[in-house]
Length: 362
View 1 (spheres, rainbow, N blue to C red):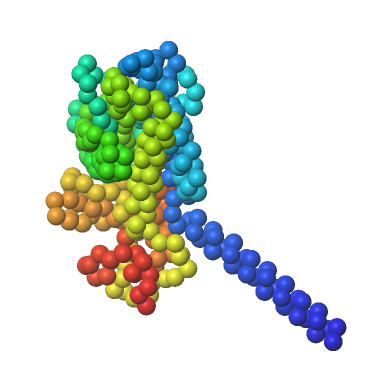
View 2: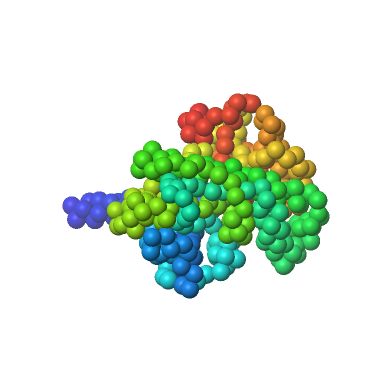
């Protein structure tokens, strides 16, 4: 009787132990799959001896900071979002430094928050992305960031043929710029729609302009103008706790939606493997209108890049495999190479399907 009881206890303990180990292994597989954290840099405009505009006696620097902190507070509640601030107090940060903070953090998104002013009684909220005039400066920064490869050990072997100043490498970086612009326009539209339709603010639309702070970043970036402090009614709204809370909520909700959309083509179960040859997984690392050769030095050393033309665009894939676990590893490698917005896609024959559909197929 005693032996039977001890045997039952030991069997139960082994079961619990194996269950715990299985849970740990499964949790680790989830970590490998996707991005651990989406990094967003929140930039409160002006600060310190630079007050920004002083419409109706309000100080832009204070309002921008309060809104940025509220946005960050809401985003920090999401387990998969890491928030970094260019400033958290009333200090002046140079424009180039703001971009450097985002670039160094390998941020997935940069959001700069400001208030507008005008000699008229203009009012309303607007969101800006980098205009074409800013692309040349932005490209030079991207080239400088990419040139860090030359500092790596054995870079000649790992990135055979790589030259950060070569024509094809510049085209490759231009492709990245184009992709960043597409993503910038996406997040900008989410923010602007929240302002216009959720908060009923006057819609000043999404526009392109040559803001210095946007030229300094090499990731999807937007500059938000919350409204006009020079308009008495709008100035009071933006200076109020209610107005700041609502505007911050609109921005935070848009960012959450943006990151959620980036995950649409990812999956959370890495234990299933597709055995049929009719279904394959790939990692999409870039897309754009430029056609470039699929040499490793154009894709940060990644080999066997596949280029597919879809309409007027070219899509670039890495890690073609029928085994989902292999593509998970390919995604991890692509992200380590700097393709932070890379994601997994699935195809059945020539038809693109969702990854979830592919996983369900036996």
